[in-house]
Image 1 (cartoon, rainbow, N blue to C red):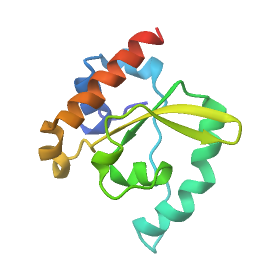
Image 2 (spheres, rainbow, N blue to C red):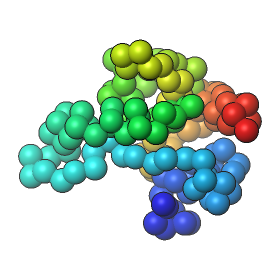
Image 3 (tube, rainbow, N blue to C red):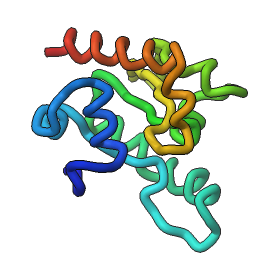
Image 4 (cartoon, rainbow, N blue to C red):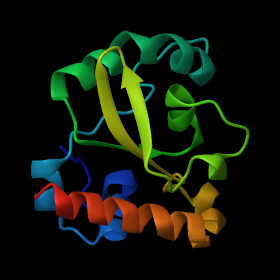
Length: 136
């Protein structure tokens, strides 16, 4: 599931949540917002490709918790001006009759490093750790 075991977003998420990769591979279904390549750019992929597979994947997997990494991913689910409006909160995402718990993190890339030192980020980490502990 996780191609490179020592780098990238999955590795960073495991470090934040203090879980090993084997546990993560058993418990997490990993999907990115833009899984397709289009010559029109990332914005086009976010707008058009996401809607073709993300909702179907969520319905099939029926996750107990959706962990959202970064602004671009959060914008798919919620409207906000600043990421800290939604980051670190126990949110709900409703799709038809289905409701899912969601927690938004700052993205694990170097570009968001300064934000990950914030209380909001620590709150998101603790919230997800608690939810993972509750779900066994």
